[in-house]
Length: 122
Image 1 (cartoon, rainbow, N blue to C red):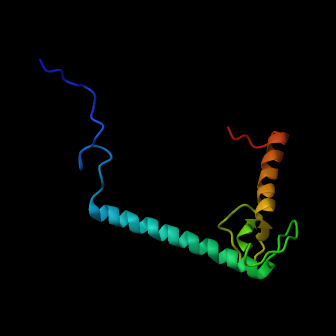
Image 2 (image 1 turned 135 degrees about the vertical axis):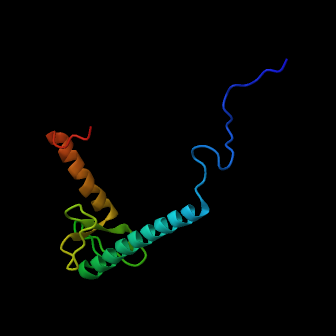
Image 3 (image 1 turned 45 degrees about the vertical axis):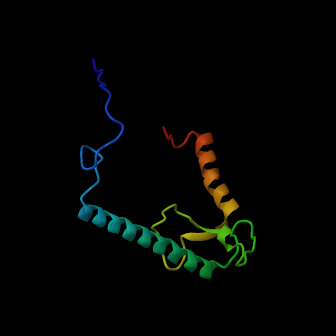
């Protein structure tokens, strides 16, 4: 007598059922959309970062730490209004903050909201 297993197989067959790969044309189109989105996001980020560094200099707006080419990666651009898509060419929504001051800026707001019973994230 042969015992049959009634558990579904862990291995899926190509082209069968949910999760099967999309048509090659659809996959290529989806890959292209993802590639374009990543490229434009990178260009947008680099664009305002470079502009902010030119306008505000290589110095942290909070602690006044000065940066050079070897540690410039630690200098970040903080959006004052929190909207990363609001990038006026005059730089009025940006301030350059070192990684430590930038973290402090964001965690300070979270702590203040928590202590004041403000925003409820539940």
